[in-house]
Image (cartoon, rainbow, N blue to C red):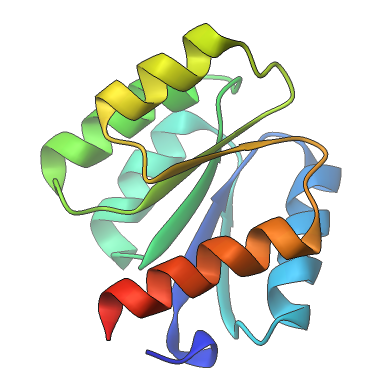
Amino acid sequence: MKLKDLKIMIADDSVLARKKLKDCLIGLGCASVIEVVDGQAAVDTFKSEFPDLVFMDIVMPVKTGLDALTEIIEYNPSAKVVMVSSTGTKGNITVAVKAGAYDFLLKPFTTYQIKEILSKLSEGVE
């Protein structure tokens, strides 16, 4: 699957974090990027849009990223959700991986890290 064909969702309550990640994804060739601002919106949008990949902040209003991750994985066990956090404790990483996270990113991330995740995803899809 080509990057331009991927549907990607960004779930983060920070407009700046969403913009940085969206700009990075578009710069790498991704054409379809959906943005949501809280964990409940992430779950609802996942169920209606079926994105190929989700980047989700851990600390968000309404529902935490970890709670949203759990609901998304229960709904679709093969969902690819990358947890993103500036509060990258070992506890959060462990909980996210056990809950079914595809990967984990610490803020601030680099374009190289995003490119690596996209490469890993496209290899697994083809």
